[in-house]
Length: 126
Length: 126
DNA sequence: AAAACTGTATCAAATGATTAATACAATAAT
DNA sequence: ATTATTGTATTAATCATTTGATACAGTTTT
Image 1 (tube, each protein chain N blue to C red):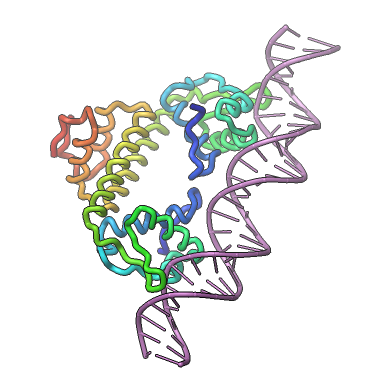
Image 2 (image 1 turned 135 degrees about the vertical axis):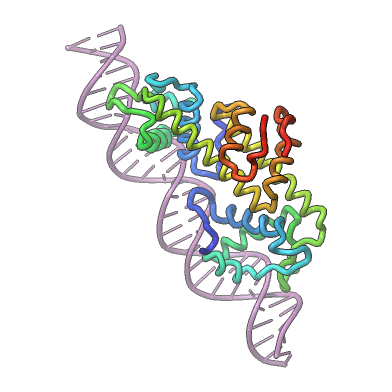
């Protein structure tokens, strides 16, 4: 359980991404209030300071808004959320193909490997 | 230039992967002697101790072999190299799809996004 | 034989991440 | 009004990573 945090990357950075993902995939809805720093820290089994750092860094992106002493809210700007979702997805795709090419695979080989290893994509052919 | 090392992950770990990739994609050929610790450290603009750590950890995988005071060689076991290549590729694919699903994309949507964002894969359809 | 080069080991110092223990001011709940 | 809860700030301690400066015992090279 907990939050599946690795030790091979700064924890605050992993937490940031987790929360970002929860917003993007709708676990935290637009306009909804986030759990408090202390609650989230407890949930993730992490020091409040670490959670605080993750949240305040995430705030720079505009996805969450802080009301000084009444808590944090998810932005109501659904366009921004969807935009961020797409940005991350595209970055993910580019990084994936870059990594695979660096390993020495051609585009065709990559697609073939996907076909062989992705259950539902068996309809794909080059 | 240099080796494009980030500060968001331990450097020795990034170096390890870089060298592994060079072996897998054939920049360092099977049986070929690797540059010395000090040479590699200089090339990566990194402390020799850090490079030493990366190399000795990489050695556990069996991809490189150390001859105590005459240097390091890439293994001649091409099957092992190809096997490692495929293992890494498959892990890469699984991680990619897991990340995309966590963002909220279905398999079909992922494939569509790939089509839209990967230059040479425009022949693909679901 | 001498010099240069191998991997390896060790010690100290600097830095960043993380935890821990508090504290404070502003708001919400009672 | 009082209490509890908010985000935030501060300070110290701990830990892993990284650098730096050496040193040593074997191989090659000359």
